[in-house]
Length: 255
Image (cartoon, rainbow, N blue to C red; front, side, top):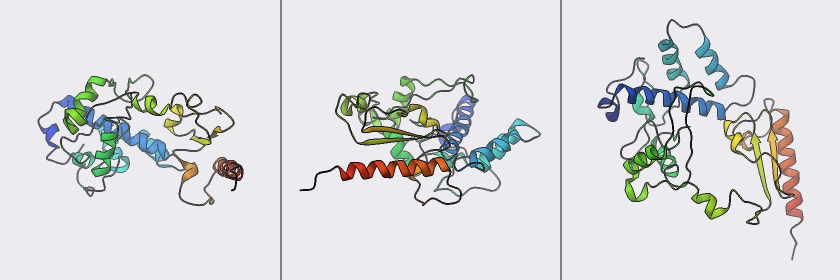
């Protein structure tokens, strides 16, 4: 695989299982990022990555090496090395950083990676695992025990305490009607894997879902105006959102 030496410290003294899990994690969260950015069709990074992996290679290791160099998550802190793949580029900032973080779809690198690792070590618990049956990745079961150990190592036993369900208990995310929520538009790009956990149907007249069949992760909220590559579904979603917001704003009494 032409991995740069030395390896991250925790992998230098770990087992081959630790190394294989780190490599599998990089591939997994790189695909998660490519999936979120799977827009606009047809020529996306996800499509190109899949073509790269399925092209004829001498060995699976060669295919994996090419994927790591071409499509894995890039670090803002370490420049890519033309001669080897630097696993240290995948480590978030802070003490005891590891490639497998609190979010198995990827926490990121540097200080932003440290922040997201903390978020997913406390309030935003994500139960992500693989089984090689419904996915293409080596089996790895998520457990709260693993997360507890990881978070305590990263942020200490007082701060690094996972609290599954606390956000829902505090804010009523799982009972929006009951807590009186209103005037929210939930947009779902259905090409985005996260959309399966989204609200995809209206909950009330003011809790509205808009599904975008060929949209990815917040494709409708990209910071560019509609252009030649913007799909009709995203254009329509933006028109609907604008109309609904205008109706809500116009309904506010003026004193």
